[in-house]
Amino acid sequence: MRGVTLAICALVVLLSSSPEPATCSSSVHRRYHSIFSFGDSFADTGNNPAVFAWHSVFDPVMRPPYGSTFFGRPTGRNCDGRLILDFIAERLELPYALPYLGPPFAASPSPAGFRQGASFAVGAATALDVKFFRERGIPAPRSKFPFNTASLGVQLEWFATLKPSLCRTTQECKEFLGGSLFLVGEFGVNDYHFSFQRKSVREVRSYVPRVVRKISMAVERLMEHGATSGARGDPVGMLAAGAGLEELRGKHPHASIIYADFFSPVMEMVESPRKFGLREDVLTVCCGGPGRNKRQRLLRRSARDHVRQPVGFPVLGRRHFTEAANRRIAAGWLTSNRRSSDARVACPGPESY
Image (tube, rainbow, N blue to C red):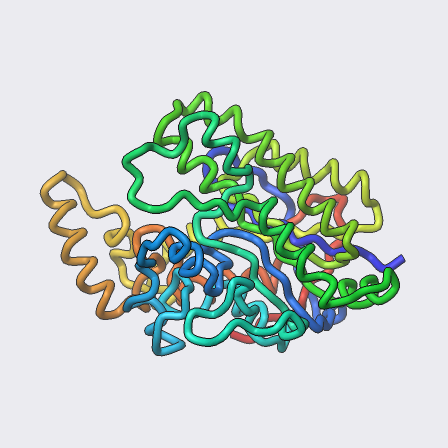
């Protein structure tokens, strides 16, 4: 039976896990003919403007400096250029994953046009369904942005709808999806972010097991569809995620589950910005400086510089990575994956950025 590769993308913030590092070599290089992505703004290649349009709200990512560094225009990505997903696609010699809801500057492709990949990710997507939040009065009524209803479950439904155009018979799906790379994540950060508007830290912590179970169930569903290579993302890192990984490994001993780390490369950029060609004040645009008035002045000044030259910063719009940061993170994922000692590792191969 062909081994399953599940890449686990984790941004460790609340709690941390420290899996052992494993270095990949070209001998385990795999070729994929398509790439499918689920997640939030970190993997959204253009779905977000469509969701905003449903609510008759203009999406801020459709104006500069978004898209200015690489594409020369906004593309619906929450970035000045390419996402981590785009760099992975380039390394695997695949086209950029098309947004499932349709690119903002062209007609939506036919279902058959997604045979080389699609992104179902939508900015601000949650792992848990919208019903969970509405029952708890989340988000706060004052929120100026539409609450995203394109949760992980909805994105899986979109994939199920698309699947018949990709393959029909069990054998055909096994062959097609077996040669596709699936990325699931990141997920969870928006669940917590929205919840903090109305709930205490203690209560939000109680949501973590629900989020982990939801993500694990999504991975299971993709495997039932026939996926043999995938990526799962758990943003606000938690010990419960480690338990979720071990449970998946126990259920699927044939699987090779890869842990791809957000936290370490980001911290490295913050601690040693010059090493990566970044400005020394890398955090000013998101966090300002000491003192209330000084912080506000620094934020205003940094925001102006940020718009003129986002490439010198790791963060765009105070919460999303720039192309420079995404390049670094992707390079790290493509050369060294972090995993638990009992996991077998299969990596895309050495990076070339």
